[in-house]
Length: 502
Image (cartoon, rainbow, N blue to C red; front, side, top):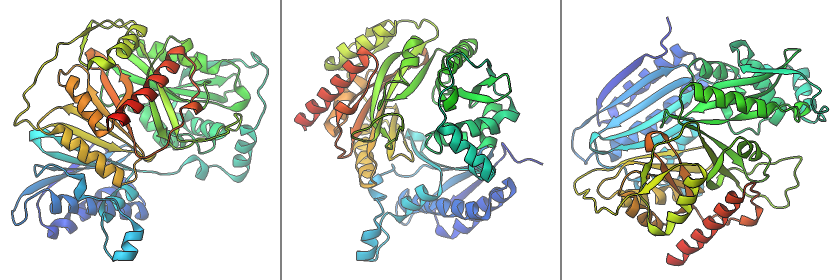
């Protein structure tokens, strides 16, 4: 009998004596689900540190309080949610782990968070205001990735395919359609043949994940299939977890010999049609800026640039492109409405209104500027979420403002910088009047302009960015659209302005 979708909830006192009980429950759930002994051990280590941090830091010393741990079996892995109503989360209590410091002082300062992030695939912290706090851990049920599934001769073939010359344009007939479940392994092979292990969407290398994500509509895959039934290319809609009315158009790749056959254009048309069929408000694409080639299909399909995320990912290497100087990869976000949005009210300080107005104008979206409002958040707790990733990046999302929200974010930034995070982004709701003053508060911390992420029902997000002592060379950026270039210049000037203020 499958346990997928089933949960086990434990409510324990803030006493380390209950840790073995929690770990036995994690072990049992993971064992039933099919995790390897090695991954079960990693799950136990990460969970132990996360629960211990709550016990040590969430409650006043000497008091007896209770909190809950929910262990949920999902098709892709195990989710562990730790919920407490203790004191506000302070990252300064969870400093960065330094092996050098351990060697010199014989202390394990910050070892807990280091272990959580080392052994758990996804970690996020959520401040839920008066409802408390959540620490969410997720461990993928890895099973086999495509490199483990391929025989030696198949790997050699994939290496050969990666260097093949393009076939003459229009020389291959193909069909574009939804991926069939049995084709998941071919999609993973296609990714491996196209990029080796360089593609940032790690799930694509695990056929079972690809299949299960499609079954749950967490990935909506389209494939270009030749008359000989070969998967030539892949692209997908990736629904947003935070806004069900939008989705990303991404996870796109075509085997080298089939580039130039028009696969990506046909795949894009299929995804746009699917998004409209599903009633999505809009879709967006993220494209690298080391070269402009991945930006061009977006602009050709009527997308408009809305944000430029500096140093968003690790350095990428493109064999066909000369890269005289390398730096962390920046991503440009381009958006397209699939239906005409209603007039939306947005709030922003005067110095950003011109660039925001132009951004919305290029999207053919009508906005009205909200009047300045002095909001009283005295006694209200903010709802703030923090999510880190494996690319030395982090995103802080303000879901609701509250008392001392700016101080909370400042402490989060300080903790992330201690932890070696390079690029930090903060997301603010443009429809909330407080955002008008919140943007200025974020500038005092060191955040500067990034852009917007349009959403459904007027839920547009204002994005700001912070670089942790990372020297950034704007001259390396290669942008396709005139507005993209204008946006990059505006961001560079805003960065200089903020640093002058600080």
